[in-house]
Image (cartoon, rainbow, N blue to C red; front, top):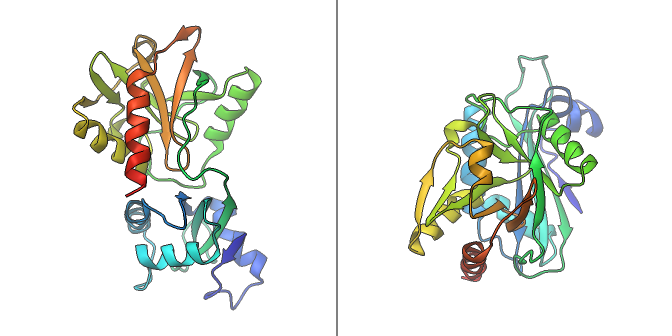
Length: 273
């Protein structure tokens, strides 16, 4: 199902207006959200990230756009359990320099069977992406349609029999996976790359940092090499749609999952309130 905002589609056919700047220039942001029992528990966090990105990219954000507005638009068309995607792009006009900074949006939803985040008992097999590196700049933390590097990494993972791939930044530091933030346990501390290393400002990332501290674990945001990741006790990936996915193996190194399972249970409980 989808819902296409049509407030600004007056001068161009719907298809042209829909694709021009998002398709031609990647001039777009998006949010992938999880709907649980007709609720979006992390809607405020998603809107906070999206609105900050729109301001950073120079969009003229309508006054009526808010967390409540988009929650209403999504839930009006969404199944009770669903994955939803909100894509926002700049209005048509101009080449690299836009003529119109007003945004337009598209909402898509897909029904899911589960009422909560599921524990991935078998775990993921993950490898190191060799084909691309991620840049580090002012836009690194945003979720944009400039996804060619992630597509290349996902294709590499599939060709090598992995479930996902870890991407490094231009400085050969751990950045993220193809659609997830990366976490690992080093002794008693939970570690994840700092935002300064170029990873997306994950909604689930921020929530887990809070939940982990509440559970009594130390938390470190620190730069790490791929060798550091291989020496960890536990590794897992996170995003707002799938929650926590434990990593079973990276290049022959097998990881535990005891603390990761505890965090998963805390996360599931937090979505029920």
